[in-house]
Length: 439
Image 1: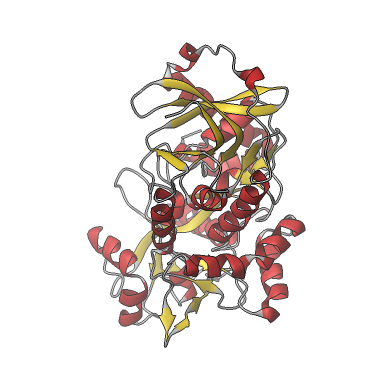
Image 2: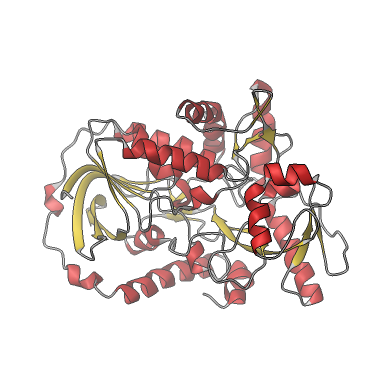
């Protein structure tokens, strides 16, 4: 590994991979990830990727996105995302992503909050299909060096300019690495929650680092709770039951077998209704009933969900599934614009760790993969214009020993994030964080 790069990208989810694919091939790029490259939340995405269905769909899609976001969205970001959605999806198809088709035509589905069918999918493992396809393309790039099991510990700054990063490498070394531009694509904060659909190693490290360096954060308390994950005593991340299942007709029922909510309402509404029913009956779950969906459709459209539920002892074609809400996605994050630009020069944020305002207070289903593509592309194109030299002023002696106590580093990072959530929204903190005894 070299000490100087043109660009450093942190994170191998969809945003990080797509940024690398669009950064000019003349630039020397370092791509690092905290775990195995494919262990990202992008890889776990089940439902699909939303796109503007046709020329007449812009206004509907725009309104659906704003309604789900409680009209707190950045209208500039929403417009940008929708306008570039079909180009982004077409590029995925060109790159080899295999979306499901019917009679040779792309098959669209619908999820909660969408007024029409506009979501493309690959069975119920859309994220796996997209990220694994793009990762193989990134691996072929001669200008990109990939380091797995490499942890971002800090950024190197001078005069509100980011000049590099501090990492713990896969062999345990603490190193400083410099670059002209640094792209944070580190994902969310699910690893800080007891119940989450996220991988446990995804703990909001870049947000804690941003807070430490006074990089502007936007709505860190805008955290989405997914209504339906499989209720289980098994340790680790919770298995998500895609919103597409409810989009195809599955219904939610309480302990008495009563249907208690419109399942296609935005996620925060459905999650709140489920929590209310759990409190009402003193239970730790409600039930998802898939009986309205044909056995063939369940097995063909949702094979991964069917198989996982069977592993837990539930046949979704004949039995109700016990489900519970869990932390799923963060809408806020490191404040950025539609190009990933943050309040610190040469520091960019894209994907879930970025707070560009496109989701408002609550993300519309299946907008996350699309967001990652559009704004990572914009970020890469802006970085391609940078022909400056690496700032050697910051190539100073750094005390790397201060990072050697990793347990203390993790505790401090977690405290920074949770304190910020509580400061911004104590109601959410008490309802979803303190309630789970993890904050």
